[in-house]
Image (cartoon, rainbow, N blue to C red; front, side, top):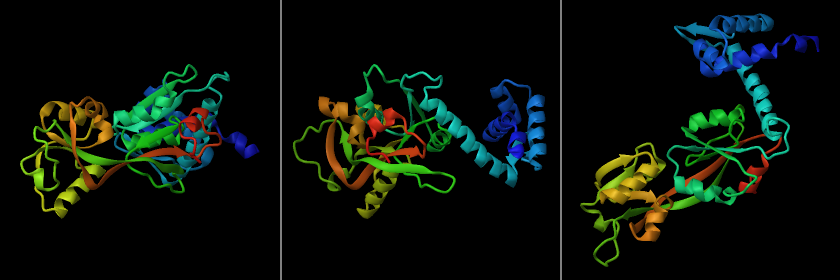
Length: 295
């Protein structure tokens, strides 16, 4: 017990903030303390632990091996603190805490809207929606600043990354474009000649599948645009006169109104949607309502 009392959790929190930022000045600005005061508190923690925690590399800081171990423990300690605040609504109130959902920037906005629709309009629900790269969102999920991450890429759990990832939807990918004047059914791959294509960017799993499909059929597609953001791909499909390789959920409104038409479903090309959470002592009630089968 005496050794535990020697551990200054205030200093540990400062170390955790510096380690996450990787830069003393940025961490000091975020914590609203002077850089010299922050540096002094880090040194005190190092003295308490008997080890150096950082190595200076120019203006940046790199964790030592011991520093990496300390960071893992700090993540757990302060992650549980965030979970505690979320569980009680942050101030002990009985009101349902907000559900904080992150979605990768390339994920269809329509898919997100469809998924969250059961919660929309409820008086007892507050949603906090964020977007970013998968890596950024997982960092927030790890410290319980997010309750759920929606992604079109799966993640694999590891000893230091206790993710729970499950596929919640799967959708075929189609060729979608302006309504065709002729009444003949579109034939893939025979009718691909001369079509101006709007494609997801090279990093997309859909693009990888489509490129392989073209390779299998010896197709050399005429690429008009490559777009990472599905919302922008939707607008370009609507306004450019080109034909998009896209999950139908992205352009569901335009298909319903007849502004766009589905030419064909591409064989073997599909997009998967994943819900990623992390192990917690108590999952938010709204998350259980949204994904009732989540473990």
